[in-house]
Length: 146
Image (cartoon, rainbow, N blue to C red; front, side):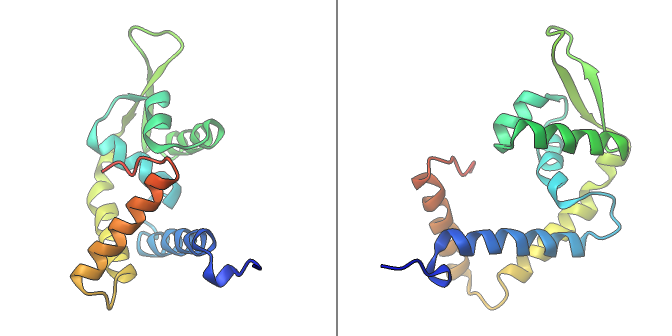
């Protein structure tokens, strides 16, 4: 059987991820964050003062990618880093007032992106697709972090 990218879940998932990222970027244009920073912001909005290691574990991002993302976020005034009080090797990542202030705009952009992704879907279709996506992630050994 020959590989057909139009029938490949992995290929389509890759296209979907890129398109969703671009859609979020378009909706959040000028808000002050990049789409790659959004997962970090979500984690910090849920609980500020995480270590880089905790962010890596929660987001399943490569160390080098996380380091450059955090460096850019710090440069842009979205986060600050402080020494961990008990572990001299670790730093704690905190949102700045600017990073905290992005939440409403970012969440509105994310919500609008979700609405666009599911335009024309009935509620049960949306729920079913999300459930299938969680199942596929579980099949790949990835916790969908529900």
